[in-house]
Length: 602
Image (cartoon, rainbow, N blue to C red; front, side):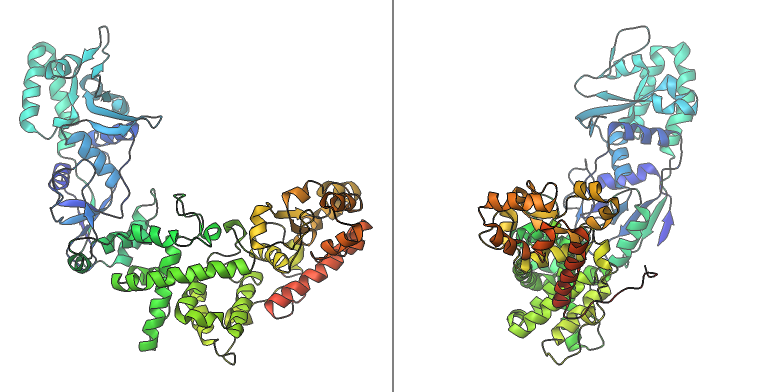
């Protein structure tokens, strides 16, 4: 890493010639008019601009490059350096100070505009505090500016600019044009123009021409992981660099692939869109590929699953290798391995969608842990159809619920990913050691009392288990709830003893009434009738659903509720009984007993 302070004119010249370009992972330039004017004012005052960072090309880390916005005719130029940080600032300066055309930006209301930038000479030679006001943007379609005590002046030619005393910034580095403009300005009003021009040249033009850009130059041997780390440290004001975007640029710059595919470059974004579109069955969980947002499965999830499979394969050949999916593993993921494994991992995620549906988890909002799906997809990729063998399916299901109900994926997960992949693959042999996620998973009985919102994986898990346990809706009573009818009937989590009724009877019941013990999955249609005491709304629900009262009690019981306690409006007895039944449900799913946490424990 080397430090440098090149002249601004030289930096903009390198941009114009294509010697300095952007790595393709950089986002598009988009600065507004006000920000550009303030930036120009900063340069004219010779105030610090902030450090710019570049990466020398020619090393093992090869990114696809593209010119900065506004640069033309350099598509075939191989850049000497790539701009890692400073794109917004340098692009703004390049377009406003170097190009002989209007800058395409946006106004304060985000409307697109085309403007030219000028310096009001009279204001610019005044106090530094007024410099922002001296930088003027003029619309391209009507290049007029208002001057004191006179009509608007047209700035579309030098005569108008001189009359208004507005210097065009886009000629600032063209010495010949500056001299021509100076001659016109001083001849316009010789008695007053020379003092103005002398002060302007000293206070403004000299600062622009001698402005130095503080620059950190990373060597060509800088690794992708180091690029990512450095980018995050220096780009604190922007959007963090996504590993997917970095790999997109890396794969697009893969010369071997380009050679083998007759000049076509690998498009990771296109591959990701195609892979995600294939996840039709689990679309509600994995997200809609046409929505434009990663509302379910993300591109990083895919990369991590691929990395887990690849490193597992490497360990089979070299036992000292580690199964891992940390950032460095993703950044060092060769294109040929990604291209080979990505379709297999995609198919594994399709299987994961089927698995989740079997667990009665069908939407992203109801998914306890998205992260737990990553090692599961990796295991499916490695084992293939062996995950469907009855014994292995049972063990995977137990592992899944231990992870959810034991809330094992709530902290740092990358190390757990790797352990789970290795241990689950080994668990194809039932006599093999139990995976840590199973053996270390615990559920405290007291935990039920504090599960009150969807923020908890265990909360979502218990709701899904109730549906899996064949809970039947209290309005659509013909059949138990299924993965399909959850969406069809707008099933959500509803309170059994309504909050208003609890408040009216005993305010101390409100807090336990918010817990999962007093909640159950019911349709929107059923929820409309849950008003007041259970003894009053149960007959209404039975009548609405066309079910005899004694049969309706059987429907209520499918939710692990004693209907007699509801009909007696006995909240305390109901709470104790349902708490016990839910604990039994949890213990059955985890394959192990719950324990009583001491009251002094967190």
